[in-house]
Image (cartoon, rainbow, N blue to C red; front, side, top):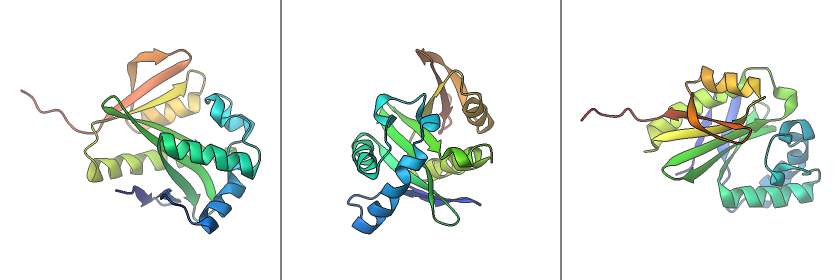
Length: 171
């Protein structure tokens, strides 16, 4: 089942495999801009140095093998970010990023609010987990605003936040 949805200012579309050559070509032009050094500074090594369309194609293919990838488009249908979901140990791990030119406009909160609504309706997922760098105050604030709670575990300099998608029924 494909996850695609719209918000007031965003169109979010899961990448289908196989991608049409035209769709992929258009997206590859934007990947190096979206994955700027400032955007990826706290992300894993495979996000670093993606500064050409060719490197973007390798990165995108790699990401599509590791997780579900949704492209975030603005209302002019230009790609401005990505949302990633990877199933792991009974939970779905969530990651997102935006072109830095779109930071501070409330788009991350808008994206995550609607994403949570959608997955509650169309999936049987129990929990979402998001990792965030300790010093990424803006992302921590977004996660808390949309209902994530800080988890008990951390991974080095990464804090884990989680949200329950299904209410637990009492015994």
